[in-house]
Amino acid sequence: MRGVILIIVFSTFFSQKVSSQNNIPLDTIHWEINAQSYILENYKGKDAIYIQRGLAFLKNTKFLNGTIEFDVYLTKRQGFPGVRFRTSSDRLNMESFYLRPHLANKPDSNQATPVINGISPWQLYFGPSYSVPYDYKYDGWTHVKLVVNDRKAQVYLDYSEKPNLSWNLVHKPREGGVAIGGGGAGPMHYANFKINNKKYEIIDFNPIKREPIQGLIQEWEISDKFEEKQVDDINALKSLISNRKWRGKIRVEEGTAANIARKVILNDGTLKNTAFAKITIISDKDQTKLFEFGYSDRVVAILNNAPIYKGSNQYRSRDYRYLGTVGLFDAIYLNLKKGENTLLMAVSENFGGWLITGKFRDLKGIAIK
Image 1: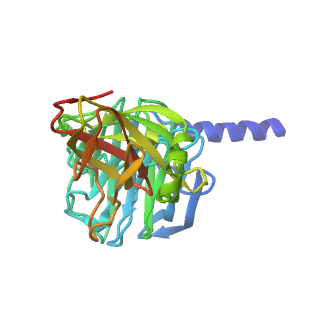
Image 2: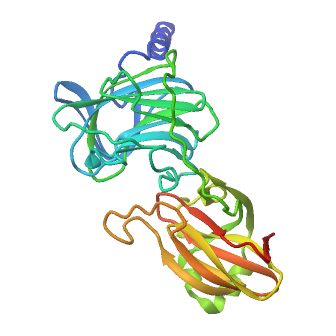
Image 3: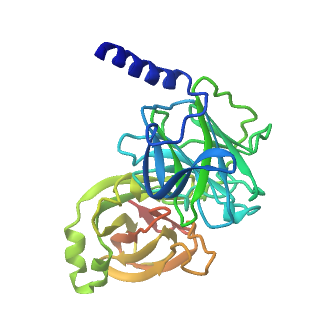
């Protein structure tokens, strides 16, 4: 009798895997649900899951290339319903696409972005390369179809014949998990979820390319992290700097900024949310140079162990719609001495991207070591 039961269980599991192009039931048998709250119910004629602030991970499934489809019932409340795919085993790295239904017809109506070491850096991956305006409906189900092939992805909304958005994936292609859900206070209903691993044709692939910022410093050296409040103690600043361990260098991405999360994991249960990004400037004489820079979320600039600037570029820090996207929006005059000068940017992060960038328009008489 035990052998018969095992055969039945194995057959059921195998059937789920090979027939994944059919709807996958939204229940706790097929999904691991990690959310603030959720309800399994029939909604507007469909068997659905209602998720608030969290994700539901599909069990026993590995996804590399293929098509993912689902329906979502949108509301005008702020929310970020979407899909994660190729998730790593520790769930710190993945690709994602989500909707911003409260921003219908806006340039950032939706968002394609990687998740890198637990941070979704949409403040770096922004603009028409990673989002498209869309007129959402709030009186019916919205259909989302995602097609993934190697480093390419496309999204079709509401059964469009042509892709609404095409973009290049950031992570190297690797098999991983799949999840639905999102953040924000506004919960959403999902229904009719299915995967087809055999259908991954990319058509009309014309991603919009972002023009790189010319003249950027291409590499920054990154320290281990520490608590943000430690930077405020000016008397202990030299000790804070000397006690740091250095994690290596990061390079500019998207022609815009370097991602500190490449070297340091932010969310590890500690209060440490700040790291130093360092460059060394060689000056042929005592002189003053204008340095343009950008960061996310907050920064303290320190030149030769002396703090010279403090600022905030975080989400909604400058007005209620300010996004905190990174660019060369700030500048300081650096009083350089002859010889080596160390510029440290103590960058603190909440969410949206742990980022640093900068350039000198005039390099006469200086060099970056």
